[in-house]
Image (cartoon, rainbow, N blue to C red; front, top):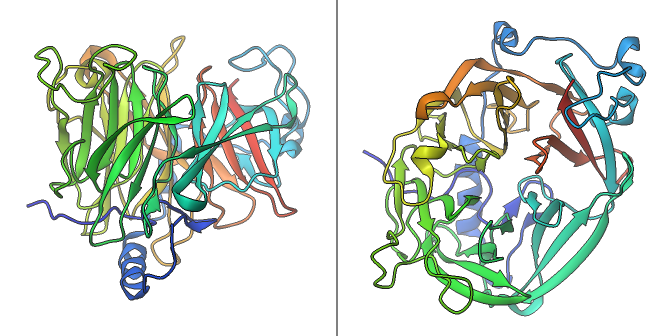
Length: 417
């Protein structure tokens, strides 16, 4: 039986670096502290068997051979591999099939679970502001392979109520020009809203329970949580979908409102006891990792045909099961004969600290998503416990971001050689 519970990991609107983004501070914290202890009890991931490295290979890009720009091997975008010292203050790649082709820096304060890829062509995040407003920050890389990310900030009067927790993401949807944010009340009352922004103003808002993380494919929004859009009552934990309805303009919406050509928001699949991250790749495959009360977590993949707009419920394909939980997830689509790659950062079961990210290769043939081997280490952290932002860009490259010991935040762009 699926237990109804709050999302695992930080409270909705919280990240491990900056803490809860909450409006108002008068509400006493006994309930909050209790929630933290429960959440931390599930923030775990076991050490992976060394044999799993066979799925991805092993090596170290900090040796002398990786220090020079590769002659002609380039990377997926044709650029040369950078010296590993360009990012070794944050991490080193242990798979010799991968290298970094660009590094960018910013002084913006970024939470590891709050960064997504925006339609402007760079990372983006949301932060709570005064009087219920939300600040959306868009970071744009320079033309060069090394430099500072330019920040553009937009403040939106989102109407967050006092005591609400801003969700950990701002997500650009590939339809209607909308940007989605969310807020949730404090556990155990996890009711909240999905808020859709267009042209610096709120276009639509929908009640929802326990909205935790989101991703989007053409014509459909996917989210992990406790209810479909439009339903504030807590239900089974799982992955939910809401389809694009109507047309751009005043008729744009995510609910049918009597339109028989548009499906009601509904559950795709229910599993686990707490919510976790969700990601989509460029081919429309969707992935989610949801933890259970027994201390395990399960990653499932949903092939594009099974998760597209109008598709019904689907159990998905199990890609891996690990102890504990985690927050950062990125999916690279299969391309040019190479398999796809699901990259995930778990947490240590004893210390609750972030572990080095792992990756599992996958294929998406025949309407199924199949894992090719077990999760294996992809990189090593320069400083143990560093929480990373993992995201895929619109060129199918992996962005790896994290705080530098000297201050500021570094993003490295990694590709297959």
